[in-house]
Length: 419
Image (tube, rainbow, N blue to C red; front, side, top):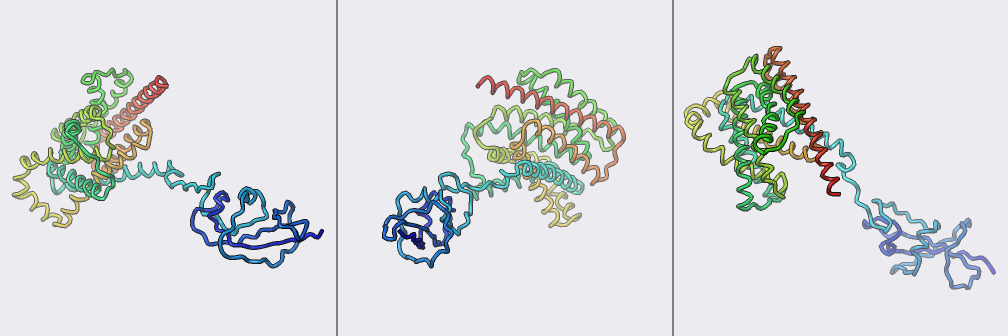
């Protein structure tokens, strides 16, 4: 019996072999060389050669037309190396032949993306504080500027809802009742912060606002009835001492700026309390959008009553005379945009990290703002003010770390009890 090699070539549709680890993408028809051998030249049975074929292949016979179907060939084609496909897979496939979607950049480099969020949070916050103070240097109307901040943010939210990024969550009467106290405290804290920014140096306002953890602890202890550990109270002592030292020798000190910053601390403390009571299933982006809308409605009446007459008589006219209409309008727009974006990015950043990282990041943000404001505006500070500021920031850092560890222990205890 003569050994006969019968190479042949045929067009096979790649979709017929779903288990050959082929790309699911559309590919051109490929010629596949199937090598067969038989012990008898008259044999009609086809089988794949179990040994490597070293003979020089003859000129293949090409068949065209419909795809060939051979029962049981899929497993043989996968095992044998005598069939070669000149096709490079475009994506990785799993064991069943289905292509696995490639990982996104955020999934491959989560630490890099988180670092970028922190950078943008700090960058936007610093730019907002600097530009905001520059506006107050020629347009000292914090109530009206607060309205502009919220107005630009609300327009941004409405446009985002219009294009479906994000999709607007529906709101009913019950949610409106829950969010109104939160929005009122947000509006009050925001306006009072701007009154302080307009009255004193940015660095001093942020030093006063470092007392916010003290007010949070006091409200939790005496309003909510939560027991605050002694370690937390002790960690707040450097904050109080540092703020007191900075206030006594602050060159730009005035009572309007100091009292406004303190009211802002109280307002934001109650905002946190009401936020816990208003927990809903709505995502943070939609919640912040609704709070901004309600807060805008709260801020408009006092702005009209307190600053309206002055603005109409000489406020707008003086500002336009100093910097021009275009710069005046563009400055108002950009401080509103930076205000909204830094708050939104801060929310997105804090959702990506643990409470401990959040606490450290928040302290570092305040250090960045104070440092950059001193450099940009060239504010002169006394030695005692500088030391007091450092002590206050260090106290906030210690408080934040202790509180984050306590919250982490509570979370682990709750997870253990449920499991």
